Length: 184
Image (cartoon, rainbow, N blue to C red; front, top):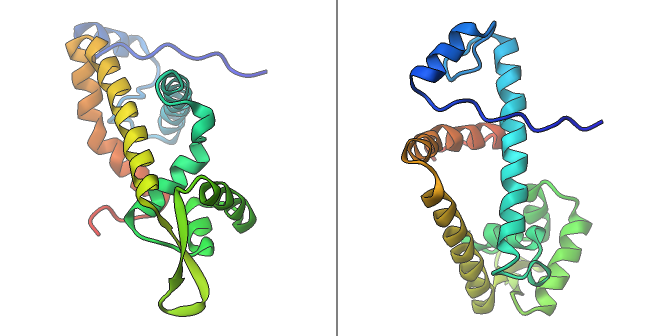
């Protein structure tokens, strides 16, 4: 049976400090035990899942979902930096090469990517964004930014500030999960 979403913790302030004194464990940013980390991880997982679902759902009204599924958006985002071979793209996305090949085929048909000769190995091809692919990605990104900006604007200033202050830590968390060094 799926767990029910837990309410968000109270914003920082006197009420939050009072609530913390009544709790048996602290799941705040300074929690240092494995149990506290697990509780925080469970809450973070729930929030991230709901946030992703809400983002996907809200974007559909402005950017038709059927036009560009999330898996294709993620491939376009990865290819925006530089052309890659299918195997490299699959490794970066942590997907099976045949799955990536299927997605690439759809992007090729849509004119969002093309195949280019690999200068290091003429027997293989690199997948690159076309100008249409760059434009589609810009449109998608812009629609997402407008949705997020409107949602942030609807928050109370304290909540908006808390979200913005959490961004550097969330960025480091994403790098830690991906096994990448943000300093590179």
